[in-house]
Length: 577
DNA sequence: ATGTAGGGCGCG
DNA sequence: AAAGCGCGCCCTACAT
Image 1 (cartoon, rainbow, N blue to C red):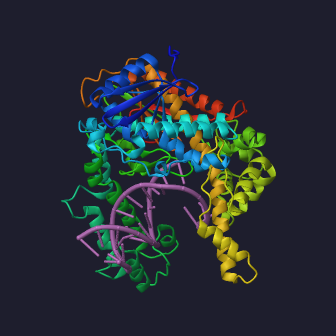
Image 2 (image 1 turned 30 degrees about the vertical axis):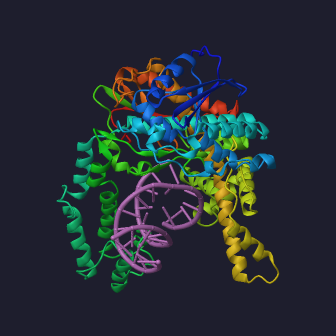
Image 3 (image 1 turned 135 degrees about the horizontal axis):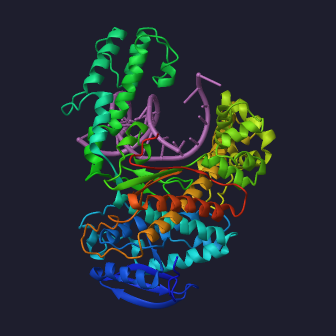
């Protein structure tokens, strides 16, 4: 990594009455220089400043501002996303009261919708186009940035918060870049999979052949030619008429009964799901030019996980993963972390026994070796139960065994649950906080504690306290796992860029194929990434993916003796082997 | 006609 | 053999 020759640390960008203004700040946040920039000059100016001075760009909203830059070939390395940072800082309870009160509520507004791949996007940078929000204005940007710096400094762990905000912002950049790059998607393979499962593509509106025949079979078995298969209440009545006494029409409940209608019905539901969620119309809507381009929403989940909007990017069914296919001459580097959450739990809790059990490749087998449980599937069940708060069933039965073998790990999640049940707030490793309970929750708890509370009120309050406890119990683990994953992709993003050379693509065309020649992130899902890379770079990319995972672990957990092994494959398609 | 709630199920 | 966390999206039913 070449250290940029630079005398500046930050460049804040915001709109003015007429165009843009850049405010250059030193590391201490002191203003060094101001510069007005016409809208049409903004992208070239950013490109030049990025190359010459490599600042951290400070702006209101990466999701709104980065796409048009990227569309003209301007890639940046680092930013500070004020909107995302604000959401994190606002949740901190350790801010001095006067600082808490000073926030501008406009920063609490929901995310802007990212709409900008086309040439039109160029103009969304223009403040006259009506696309800018109040928080884009340079005075608001500077005020908020100053507030955030104060808030970070006043917090109990500025170092951790800085890392969190840097990772969150890097994620926001990666999300925009992944949408622009897209996931290489082979339409013919997708169509073939659909045809194998559903039958050939029907005329629009018609049911695929295999589904239609199955529907006939089900209606025959139910002795009900007009039975509705798509309406749960109606289906329920049809089932009851032939003596199938289920309370819901879920698959697992149906499968507990024996009747000729059950098997085809379960199969029909599976097909129906595939057709409606990822059928031919999904293909038409979401795959263009051989790329699936979902909208990622960094920070979209309270735990810090990403959400997605449109296309169901986070729910691609396994049968369709074979449609994810590298371009000719390219490959996919597909990697996921083995048992990310239990490893995170071990490291957070400083639980050396669990860390020791994780030492091999398979943490669950390691847990079996300690003698805590008998089989791998028991180990998995028990650990998931511990992190999710299972109290009943097989999982709930197994959890107590872990308490003896891994007291520190269990103490961490148990304590998180206790705090949540009491109405408190918990934190991830880097300091993202769980949302506080709402006024309704508090009121119900208070009411239940009064002497004349009815038993129904007490029961309800107890139940919602437990619900909340399970949420905070999981929050610390899921949220810290999300931080690990963010650190991983943030680091990897830098390494991949370095592999592709330092040159920024010339902003020659509006379509700006920034990624047409370099290895790039193409997909990210909680604990898994897909890199699309030229075949010649395959091994380098694989090394980068592994090195980034080591960096992430070090950054979050220092030298705690635990690694996060990857399942990594260099392949043509993302289908599981 | 349009908006919302809930069932159901895909993913981690 | 099915409890316990977090999502998004489709569908239907039912509200306005």
